[in-house]
Length: 395
Ligand code: SF4
Image 1: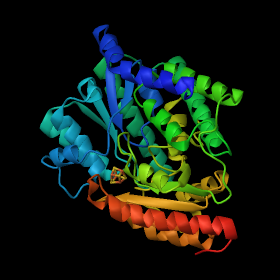
Image 2: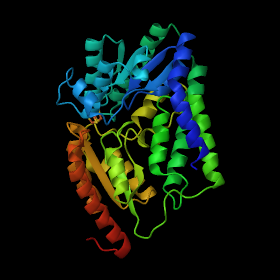
Image 3: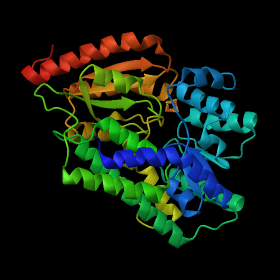
Image 4: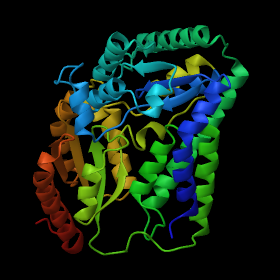
C-alpha cells in the first residue's frame, strides 16, 4: 500500500479536467503557460487559472509538431506544437489564452508557431540575455508590467497589491514544501522516491494551487509521521544519481526508467521541470519590481549565455545540490537539438570532474531506437559508481 496522499493526488489529477471545465462554465479564465522565468504568481493574483502546458515522450506528437515547426527544434518544443495540432489535450483545449517566456528562444518560437498556425491568443514575456546588468532589471520589470497589462485587459481585471501579496505567500509556501520533501526523499530509507516527488511537482502544474499546497502539506505530514515501509532498500554501494541537462516533462519516463532498472538511485536534479524553479526565490515585496528582481536572481537557466564559469550561478547551484543530495554521479542528458544544454555539457563535465564527480553525457530523443545504447552506457556508469562507492576506487 503506497502513501495515502499520493493516491489522493492521482485522483485529483484525474478529476482536474472536469473541475477546470466547471470553473470555466462559471466564468473562470485559464492561462496555459510555458517557460522558466514567467512568474506564475502574477497569473494567479489576477484571478486567472494558471496551467503549465507541455508533455514529452511521444514520438508521434513530435512527428505531428514537426509538420509545423522546423525539425531542427528540440523534441520537447516539437511535441508541444504537436499537442496544439492534435488539439485533444484537455489543458490545451481548456486554456483560453497562452503565455510564454523567451528564456529559451525555442520556446519563444513555439509561441509564434501556435499563434500563426492555430490562431491562439498568445502573450510573450521578453527575457534579457544578461541578467546581471541594471538595464536587464529595468527591461524585465517593464516586460512584466506589459504582460500584466495585457492580461488585465484580456480578462478585464486589475492586479491589486493585496492579491499579489496573497499569491506570493501561497507560492512561497508551495516552494518551501517542495524543497523540504525533496530533501527528505534523498535521505536513507525514505517512504517516497525521487520519481514520486518529481511526479508530485508535475501534478502541481495543473492542479488548483491552493489544493496543491494542502496536498503537499498532507504529504509532508505523512512522511514526517514515518508510518510504512521504505521504498528504497539501504545498501553500501548505492549509486546516487543526480540528473541535469534538458527538460524532462510529464510523460517522458525513458531515462528515469533506465537509470532505475540499472540499479541507480536518483536523488536529485537541477531540471527546470524538477526542483530548480523552487529553490532560492526571494520575493521581498508585493510589487512587480520585487517579483522581477527575485526571478532574475534565481538559478540561471542553461539557455542563458554566461561566459565566466568561475562565477556562473548555474554551476554554483549544481555543485551545491550535488553536495546536498550526496550524489556520487551526474547523468547529464540533452535532447536532440537542445542546443543550449548541448553546448554546456563539456564545460559542466570538466568542472565536475575536477571536483571528483563523474558525469555521463547522454544525447537522446523520444524515439525508442536509442534505448539499448543508452541502457548499455547507463549500466556501465552505474557499475563504475557502485564500485567506487564500495572500494573508493574508480573502475
Ligand atoms: S532549453 Fe532545450 S529542451 Fe528546453 S525548450 Fe530550449 S531547446 Fe528545448
